[in-house]
Image (cartoon, rainbow, N blue to C red; front, side):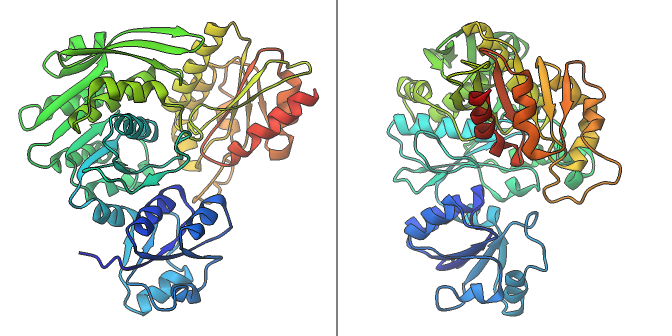
Length: 474
């Protein structure tokens, strides 16, 4: 057991860290922390009683008047020479990862964990909203902010704890799932895993950690997730979800089946069979991938004890998560009148493809114009690995403006830029390395009823409102 009476968190303003900080504060712990800049999450945590410094210094360990009992950090984002980390080690204070802390917070709960290469945040969020609608009041920690609830974490009164299980550094192996959902498995984070086989194996190891009497929930439309289910079906309870076509390929696993989908202006209307029951939902967030995420959420919610119809109503009311096909506004005047601006976190080729296909479905349903993708690659390693796949995915749009690479934790690679993507694209494309000039490039090509999507995990999200403002002036 880790002593969580006084917790200091380095990088406390991050999406994951701020969430667990909220739960600690709600449970009565003393919480301090630091981050490189002030932000809304920091303001919210201060209002709940956290002591937070802007900037890193060894003195921050005593923000609460005495040294903490434990220090929490992200090994990927926080360098080992961080002065607070150095001071903690010198003082003999235990240093743990966020995943270790989350594992401690989930002890004694029915752990409903959502894993997969793509779709974790959306599926976790849908599961939470569905379970809340069913009166289960789960505790939860997710990597994004629920639009409806306005928060990324909650200390609930129910017996379930819903959370994302992040595979990027194998931290999902810290948990003990009662319900383990695997949305899909596709090679990623090879800078950490070094090989595709090692990446695939972490999901097998995750399934091995399911507690006695627990369940593995897999997407049958994803070949690797379905194969995982097939390998484990004789060991544990495995429930598959997916389209009718995918279910027919895995009849022994098929539990939640999307029997029909109809795209309308208001959303996607879906008929589903869940076990022996039937229900219907109207998905407000477009895309087949979102329908599959909803099927996963319904399955997890039923396993957690929820009533299907109440869970389905929660899915119908789901209004999305920050940066997941998030609507920023409609242009009210000018040459691009009635154009729509959205923002999405997609940063892997499969995710980019999914969001652009969803955009196409929405545009066709409302009789809209062309789709303009504004894309910022995330990480040099990922860009080099998937340059051709990014070019192919982005070519599903009608036009694109591509920013240079957002390096995040990586140093620049000499001679590598986003041109390794744009030179292979088959649609009109502008490579614009100057961040502040991007709205102007979009204004030059946007027209009435177009859809503009800012896409990526980096700073591109800051451009959505700037593009909307510029288009209103055009």
